[in-house]
Image 1 (cartoon, rainbow, N blue to C red):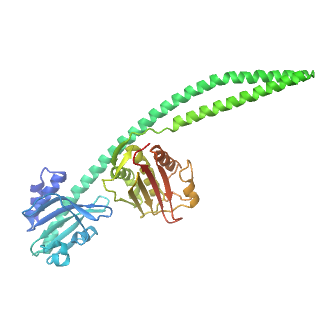
Image 2 (cartoon, one colour; image 1 turned 30 degrees about the horizontal axis):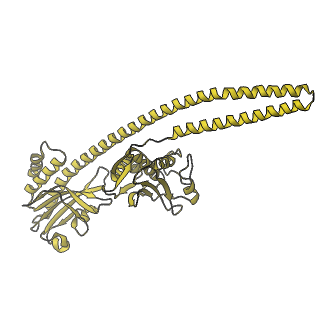
Image 3 (cartoon, rainbow, N blue to C red; image 1 turned 90 degrees about the vertical axis):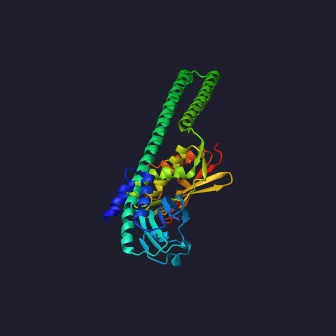
Length: 415
């Protein structure tokens, strides 16, 4: 076994990342008499295909290999087995014609989730299958450690990017709030100035009524003047009411405005960013978040805002789901629009819940399952973002205990 360690050390010195994995594969061919060596990563959730991260084929190309797992020995490895077939591989798996021997070891993430596998294929029966398994396990451990390092690096990069986006959003909101406050201050000043004259009229006319009524001198003319003054008071008060209502509506519109920076981007990119923001919360409750959205499906809109909406929906799905349940994210292209959905297996909602779900400060019948806090604003924000794009936010549920599906429906061209 010592010479195997020497092979790994010599073949992978000063290498990291995919270069390191390619060096591991090259060292593997020196350690065993094999025809094909593969280090793969799963495609889909759960994986239905495998894509090579590094590979070597005797007498052939080392280009990337991608294949369906169904009907291959690799399927069993992705299901969690370490598989050793010393001979007759092609008789058990028709797709593997030309190969006699096989050893496959699953590769796991730092969350102990199977994310790939290390496999070798041989044209000849394996003479020493136990020793061969030990060698492949040793190489697989080194490959797994590097894949985990790469995973941590990707998560770190994703977190930095998410923090940068969050910082931009906070900066934009700060600027919008400052502008809104400036507008409101100016409007309040205008209100104070414009209300001064009507209030003065009200006061003077009121004083006149008091004086006329106090005299009690009789005479129809005086009562007519009193009625005239009352009419003036009423019309002035109505004008004040209209002015206040108009000013408040304008201030509200300024405060609620959402500015969009529209661009086209892959839906999967936004989904993966939102999943990364919630990975630790899901891990704490052993909740699996999965999506199977190809990068070909594109969204046209404000990427930061779409991520913000998905982040709110995924966070809610985790918050109201029990430990060990699953959250699934999907995308569907329809004529003129795109639908992004977040489905959970949690507590479900009543019809009344569904009707009130997107209103501000609403408390629905479902409760956080691990004592998480809730402001009642998350879904209202989702609705505001959807409507800013000219779309809608909806929820469906088969009832209590049957989970919920929240859907963002976005037009192909935002308004």
